[in-house]
Amino acid sequence: MLSITLMTLDHRFQMLKDVRAVLSVALYPIHYAINFPVTAGEWMGESFGTREALLSEISTLKTQQTILNTRLQKLAALEQENVRLRALLDSSFKVSEKVLIGELMSVNLEPFSREIVINRGTRHGVYEGQPLLDAHGIMGQITRATPLTSNGMLITDPNHAIPVAVNRNGLRAVAYGTGGELLDLPHFPNNADIEVGDLLVSTGLGGRFPRGYPVATITHIEHDPTQPFTQVAAKPTAHLQRSREVLLIWPSRPKEQAETTPEETD
Image 1: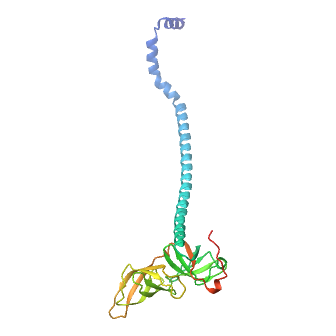
Image 2: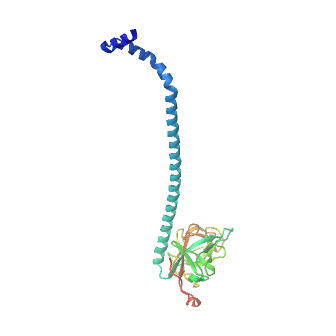
C-alpha cells in the first residue's frame, strides 16, 4: 500500500522528481557498464566491416590504377610511334624516289657488327644494295633480301663505306664504319677546308646511294703534321640506335629490278 500511495502522490504532485534525478545519475555508470559489451560489440563489428570495405576498395583502386598506368604507357608508346611515322612520311614527301616504310624485327648485338633485319623482302620489291634511311639521314643498305624479310648493314658497320661530300664546300671523301657509333674519314688532307659541325651528304657516286642525303656531322678533327692526312670522325645524322622504322627508297632502280613493283605502305 505504501508504494502505491507514493506512486499516486508522485504522479499528482511530482514529489519524487528530484529523487529520481539523483538516482538516474547514480545508476548511469552501472547502466553503461551493463550495456558496454553490447555497444562495444556493435562498434567493433561496424569498424571491422568498414575496414574490410576500405581495404577492398583500396585494392580495387590499386588494380584500376595499374591498368590505367599500363594503358597510359601504351598510349605514350603509340604516340611516339605516330610521331616517328609522321617524320618518316614527311621525309618521304621531300624525296622524289619511290619509298616504302619497313619495321625493324631484330638487331645483331655481336661486337663491332651493325646489322638489322626488317619486315620487307623481295615480295615488296626490296633488292640487295637498296638504301635504308630514317627521318634524319642515311642508315645503311640492304645486304640480303628474302621473300618476306631482309638483312641490312648500318653505315657504322666496319665493313661499310659510303662516298660523302662536305655540304658547305663540296669537298669529297669516303666515310667508313668503325663498329662503334662514329664514322671514320681517313683521307682528308691536312690542309682540307673542314670544320667541326660540317654536314656530310651522300654524293651519289657509285650509284648505290642517292645524291644529297644527310649522312653525318663532323665531330672531331685532329691534325698531325707528321701524317699526310687529318684524322676526322663524324656522327651519323640517322638515329641508328633509336629508329624502329626505316624508309626504303628506289633512287635509280637497277635494270633487273625494272619489272619489280613494290607494294604500297599500309
